Image 1: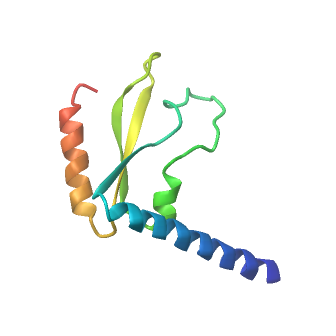
Image 2: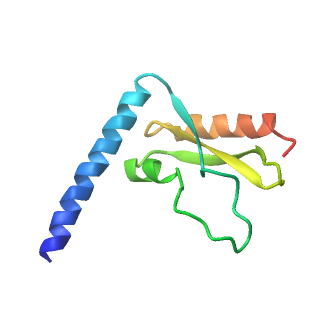
Length: 106
């Protein structure tokens, strides 16, 4: 039981650091655009690394959405992630919708 409290306390400290970094970024912008993965989608059955860039937004409790961006040289889909400030879900969904309409050729 002692380890649980120790690791929980450390995880809460790390969560606060991540939230604070996002807060600094959102002082300068409304939405963050980032990759979803370090490469295009994985082929079916292909071993994949744990390189999901979606985790920090989840840890910080921020609204985020992945939208199609295009395809790579072997026609696998590539996605981007949009992250917004807390409680800006509507703005985020509107932006994602506009982005998908603009990229309608996917």
